[in-house]
Length: 156
Image (cartoon, rainbow, N blue to C red; front, side, top):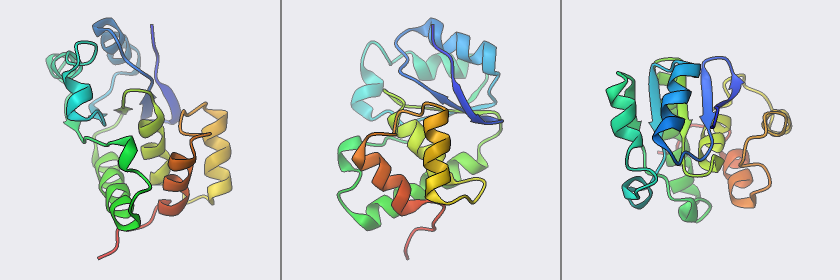
C-alpha cells in the first residue's frame, strides 16, 4: 500500500499508484479536498491508472488533470516557465489538503517544489525535497526545471 509524502501541511505528493486500493487508502489517510493528476492521456488510459479519476470523483474529492510529459520538460525555457506558472496557480488555488500525483512521483514532487510556498532559495528547496524523499531529486531535467522556475511568473 502507498502513502503520500507530506512536504508541507496540506500538500501531499503521491508516489506511483497501481491499484484502486491505493487511491482509497490515500483518500482515507490524507483526506484531501482536491487531487491534481499530472498523468498524460496515455498514462491515464492505461489499465493500471484509468481508475484513479473515477475513484477520486466517487469519493467526492475535486479532481483536476494537468497532463505533463516528462520528455518535454527542459526543451524550451518559455514552455517550462508557462508550465511552472500553470502548476503553481493550480496547486496554490486547489482546496486543501491537495494530493499531487503522477506516474512516478517525479513530476508531482517537482510541481510541489517549484511553487516554493515559503520563498526559500533553491538550495533549501533541494534540501527539503531530499529530506522528504521527493522523486525529482537526482533527475537533471527535473532539478533544472525546479531551479529555473522556482516561484517565478511565466514570461509574457
